[in-house]
Amino acid sequence: MNYTYVLLSERDGRFFAGSTIDLRARFREHTAGRVRSTASRAPLVLIYYEACVNLEDARRRERFLKTGKGKRYLNNRLAAYLSGIRRNELERH
Image 1 (cartoon, one colour):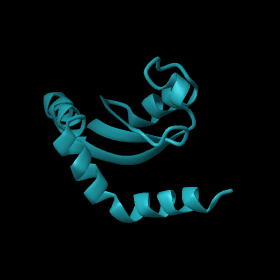
Image 2 (cartoon, rainbow, N blue to C red):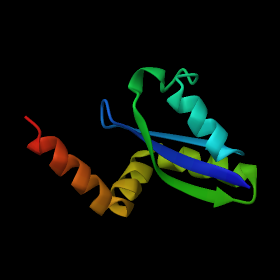
Image 3 (spheres, rainbow, N blue to C red):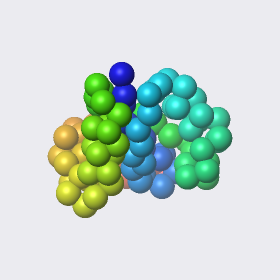
């Protein structure tokens, strides 16, 4: 199985989209700081993933999620989750 996944940086609140054949191992690499593009953005939370039979399809989906339309899709798809996070951030003093 091939996966497209989205991580949320708790540091800056931004998304990171990627694709992999082993989601658990790749997430461990991200949280351990071994991925250059997310090492400075820790802590990270896995907030979304999709499974694809074909690696090409997973990579195509990753590219879509990195576009403006893809980010709007994620914001709409995860609206309840993201509103709860953002509300908690506003309440902290």
